[in-house]
Image 1 (tube, one colour):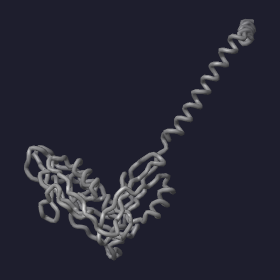
Image 2 (image 1 turned 180 degrees about the vertical axis):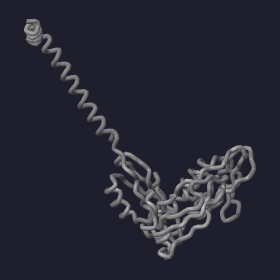
Image 3 (image 1 turned 180 degrees about the horizontal axis):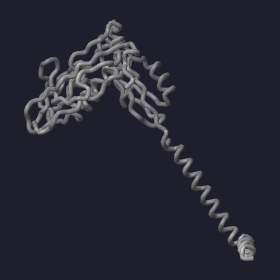
Image 4 (image 1 turned 90 degrees about the horizontal axis):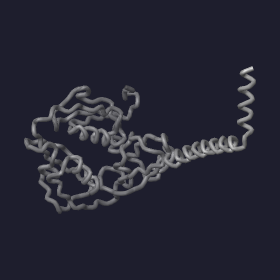
Length: 266
């Protein structure tokens, strides 16, 4: 009997036009929220990320084709001159290969120029290592060897040089030149962990070591690497010091190959 009365009350409530209108408004509001959430997700590409491909040594046309398949875009923003590298091919990219970005993100490319050009050497003295590296990249220059000397300010630039010669701010240097930095080291910092660079090409491997304040030591290519183009495309299959820690400025030897069977999967 109580069940019948309860059912009757519910039917009575639903037959009330105010209640029906209120319920309708609530349902419409919920529907709008769902539509807005879906629309916002589409606009912001929420949770839609991709891994940045490696465009190193590709022509711009090849890079654009790979970029389309990888759901990103590419833009040529700068050029350097590397004598042994093919004219017009990609030398460096930002963000780096392997980085996670939203679909449709533009990847900025630095390509190898046909003829050498010169750029003005910036003043890096007093800059942090990260600031100095960013400035070098912006000028079309390359971070070379990291040398450390006793100083109160760790990782602040004390000297800048090219091929052992101090380069003053305002000097003209060939675009793509490696700039070696002498940096301070207070001695209070402990050793730095050697990163895993196996599976990376040469340039990303160098960047990963620099991120940990280390240098590339000996670079060994296997017998399958015969040309400079091969060396650019070769991948690290072995490295020294993995799983250890080293002092700032230490060198890590790497070994590269074009044979995918040599590259460990883990």
